[in-house]
Amino acid sequence: MTKNELAEKVAGRTGLAASQAREVLEATIEVVSSELAAGGEVALAGFGKFSVSQRAARLGRNPSTGETINIAASKAAKFSAASALKKRLN
Image 1: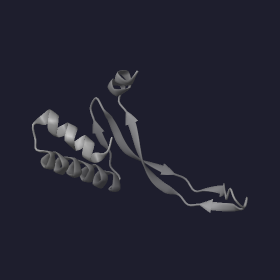
Image 2: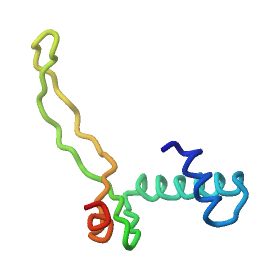
Image 3: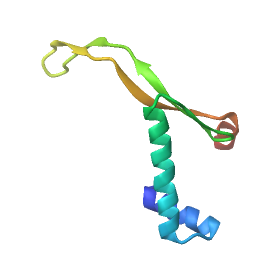
Image 4: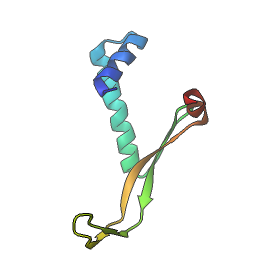
């Protein structure tokens, strides 16, 4: 499902115009992104939690040459599903 398809489904369920639903979806994504960038987390009861995961620096290998390379430490977005969502999926 694309962002536009999601906005259309939200519009259908809420009675909002499709353009309004897209604005709400864009604003939600921006707020979640900003919170994660600031090092925080976003917990949505019954759905899950978005957080930031720390990845340590490590050695890797270039698959085409076999050369050892250094991979820098980094941060990544992480999603942990709530138990209610897990139950709905299974």
